[in-house]
Length: 130
Picture 1 (cartoon, rainbow, N blue to C red):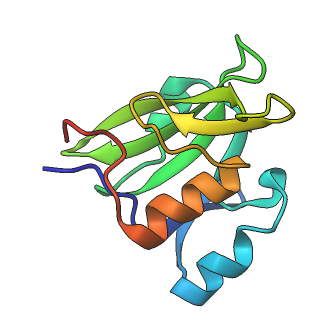
Picture 2: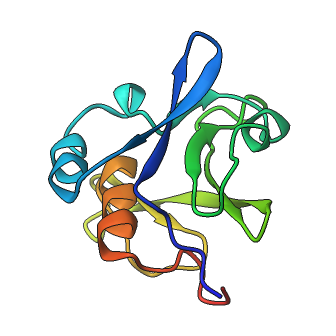
């Protein structure tokens, strides 16, 4: 089995979560929106809090660890449990800017939005062992 992000994003509306289905066009339009305005970004929340809102396999969100500011994780529901995948910051080849990748991937991206867009639209697994 492979962990693959679905096109379902969690939206917080009045304290409850609803699912919003995105088209491929909608997903590509949204990757230029700032991180803080992405429907799948939930800011500084704990791992436990994130897990409570992922109901179906493939649903995911991105969270920042409140104990380690700047450390982000993709939390995805897989086989009825939550998997926390750390996002790693790396220097670009010229060392002039920060890029992002998953811990076990060699692919790096200019932003977290670009990383999420890639994995959603290409339906690539987040980890090689899944």
